[in-house]
Image 1 (cartoon, helix red, strand yellow):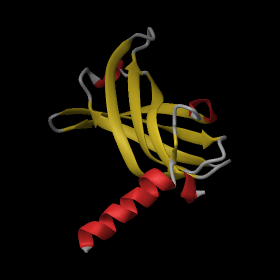
Image 2 (cartoon, helix red, strand yellow):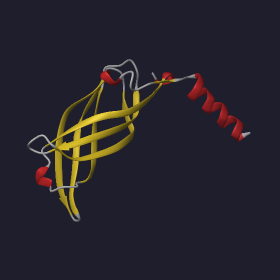
Image 3 (cartoon, helix red, strand yellow):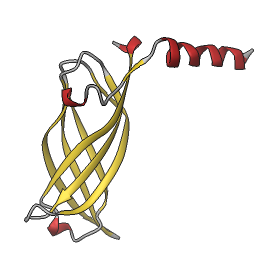
Length: 128
């Protein structure tokens, strides 16, 4: 009984309701105002990239997967981080703040800027 109910729920939300493809709306999910923050902690520096997402699409997006590259003063890539943000929701026409963080691979002084790309996000057609 429980298995049958679970299967029906999966069919409804996954197959019947459908979902938007984030690659189709990629140009409408824009990352802005990125800044780097480095904090010295025991065991090495900790780096984060904070910014803002603006949603120009007609869909509500959630469960973002970010890929961030960190650059030195010459604009060369020195490190990368990837992170999922399952609790982040961005409604149509609105903005939301995000942060990608982790242990730095290089000296904290080398991290001068960052660029974040949204690799994927999820939006069900019933979530509008």
